[in-house]
Length: 230
Image (tube, rainbow, N blue to C red; front, side):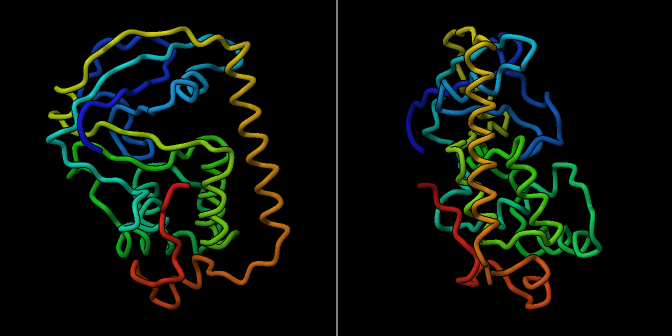
């Protein structure tokens, strides 16, 4: 990621000046300003069934920024999972899930706060459920990797540092109408769930999180899918 890029932030309000340190630490990658390069996705994320939203547009000069791209071949799907379990609130339904959370952090952890920008999957709606099912030993790591590509949810780009925030420039906004974009958001989620059920119907002899823990499997094991976007 080099040079000037265009980003969109879906919100229930116009955000002219994103502020460093604001937001929730329980978002996917912790505190930060969450954006996408897709205006349509930003509009889907901005609306609910009850209200319209806004797609805020920005330009960002990334030339001198340190970027963590969890979707490049240096990382696996479990690097992304380790970041997620550090920040999101998971329902721990099985004893193995408690061990899994610690194992993921210890063996696949990445310090997202050491970077100006973080790029990776967005775990909202059904996608968070897929991750939670993996943590509770319900699906294999291969099924998780396939599930995160369902529905073409795309990548989110998150500003993490003061330096990143100092280089973002507000360019304007557009209204996201709930009548159009909530329908699209719901349809994307429903399509992902339909494809997910097809994944579950197939026999899978891959690795569950319990297998990964018992086998002492680490990031360099070729059986762990690399987090490469299509």
